[in-house]
Structures are given as C-alpha cells and as structure tokens.
Amino acid sequence: MNSYQKLSKLIDKYCEADGARRTAIEPLWMSRSTGLNLKVPTMIYKPCLCLIVSGAKDVTLGQEVYRYQPGQVLAASVDLPLVGHVTMASEDAPYRSLSLDLDGKIIGELVANMDIKIGADGESLRGLFVEQTTEHLTNAVLRVGELLDQPDDIPVMLPLLMREVHYRLLCTGKGPVIAALAIGGSNMQRISAALQVIKHNFNKPLKVEELASHAKMSPSSFHHHFKQITAMTPLQYQKHLRLTEARQIMLAEMKDAASTAYEVGYESTSQFSREYTRMFGAPPMRDVAALLEITAPAVGKDI
Image: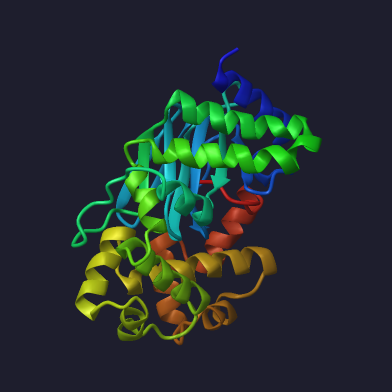
C-alpha cells in the first residue's frame, strides 16, 4: 500500500462525512467530498499547506486560479482570502485532502540552519503557490496523520514530525516563499504584519498610509509589495474579508442583509448588495437561501 492509499484510509476513517474537520491533532485538518461543491470563500488565518490525496480542486486568489491534484501541494505563507472549488469527486472516488497549519517559529529555527536564497529585496513572492510534492514530504505528512491511531504518542512525536514536515516543505522549489515569512524585516514579514492589522480591523475605514507606516514602508512601496504578495490591493483585500465574513454571519446567525452590512463595515446597504452579488453571483439573501437549501455551511477549513 503506497502513501496515498494509506492517507485515503486515514481520511475515510476520521472524516467520514463530507466537509472539513479538525482532527485530534490540533494543526491537522481533513477534508472529504463525494461531489463537486459550490465555490466556497475561505479565509486562511495562518500559514498552512494542503495535500490532495484524491480528486482535484481549484483555488482562486483575486483573479488567479491555482489548480492542484494528487502529487502536488498547495501552501499559503500569509493570511489570504481564497475561493475553493472541488472539481473532481464522486461517490466512488471522493475528493480527499489534508491540511496542516504551519508554525513560524519552527520555520525560523530551520531557516537559520539552511542555505535558502530568499531573493532580491526589491521584489516579493506571491504568498500562495502550488508545487510538486516530494516523496519525503508526503511521507512526513502521512506520519503526522498516523498519530491519530496512536494518541498516546502525540505529545512526544508530533513536535518532531511537524519539524520534519516544515523541513521537507522548505526543501521544495518554493521553499523561499515559506522561508521569507521567518526572515526578520523581509517584505513578506512586513506585509504579513499589515494583514493582521487589516484582519482585526476589517470593519473599520482602511488607512493605507497608516498600514504603510506600520510596515515601515513608503505608501507606494507598501502598495507594490502588498499586491505582489496577495494579488490584490489593500482595499480589495479588505472587501474580500468583509464579504466573506458577511456570508458566514448570515449563514450561521441568520441575520438580515442590512444589519450584516453595517456589522462588517458597510455604510450603504445598496453598495453591500452590489459587491456581494458581484463576488458570489447572487444577492445576499438569495445566495444564503440557496446555500442552506443545497448544503449545510462548511465546517472548519480547507484549501
């Protein structure tokens, strides 16, 4: 039985129903789907990697589409608003994937002992990538998953195995993207800090000059590197955050569109409705009604 067959068995055992689930191992999520799903917005709140075990998926960042399947890993090095869409799945051949939260402290410790070229200071790397996985990385992820069958080993073995996962990811061709997050003063780290500010204040007016100052950049340099890393402008990023949060509020709390619009920072309900429709393809309440009729709100996360 190869690594992918073993991973499939683990996912079927610990994620029996469709959807994403956090496992007993805190940084590990599993996802399974027996059919093609809607385009679901997902906010990635910390760096993570996702390994598809079977099926295929499209992930959209701004106007960019990232397609990946078994044999590839998708990773995000900063907080990003994404839209995921399973493109290959059936009852007989489900979509299966695992995602692992990444730890900046572990990355920093490893980078200090590795020869990784981050690149020129004047350019920034996109904070999301698809890369061919390696047998070493796949096996390292498998060993983390197998701890679910050996719960007594988790406290001792998980830190060691997670360190190996980070190391194997850093050894891939896109290692510098992950490494940049741990380099003090790097563009990636500065923009990541600004993303945290936006995330915690997404319902307030956005002041780009203050964000640039927080990132210790000029406004023009900040705007340039922000777009290189996130594929969108600060205002576009904030809008994605607001609309994604609004959809989750209406689904989970059954609030009306007007009160939700004000809660996420919109002063005009008509503007909220226009932008919501443009992003999700239908007005707020019609979109929510369709989601509730078709499927229950997604649990957990999956990229």
